[in-house]
Every structure is written in C-alpha cells, then in structure tokens.
Image: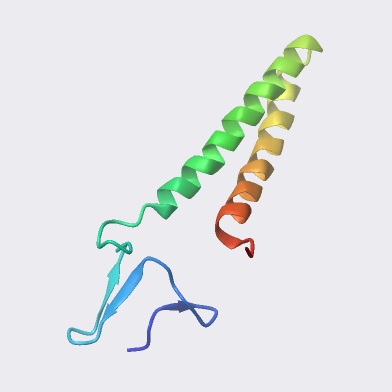
Length: 92
C-alpha cells in the first residue's frame, strides 16, 4: 500500500505502519492527536464572527444592520481563508 499523499507530497498528520499495512490517521509529531483541522475551522469561524461584528457596527451606524452583517461576514470568511493560507501554505 503506498504512502498517503496529496498531489505527490506526504500528507501531514498521517503515518503508515508497513507491518500491519494500515494508515494511522491523526497522529502528530509527538504521538498525540493532530489538531490542525480544529485550528483551521476555528480560524475560519473567528474570521466570520469578527467580520460580522465589525459589519454590524458599521451597519448600525449607517442604518443598514442586516446588510452590514452580511457584507462583514463575507469579508470575514475571505479573511479566515487568507489567514489559513498564511499559516499552512505560504512558503517561508
């Protein structure tokens, strides 16, 4: 069974036990659970909530509360994915 990979690169957080021929998922470098998926999800949610809060404040001041929340949350979603790009994918 080949090593787990994504586009030819080794998948982080996964191990392969050649003796038992099983994929060991979710192991970190110290043998614990890899929580990078949880951190990624929380980053996106935090971006949406932060953007929605700022959008609500601007919308309240301009008497367009619902529109401000929708625009702010959309910007927050983009911000959350950009922060993920910086953290996990941007070359250093």
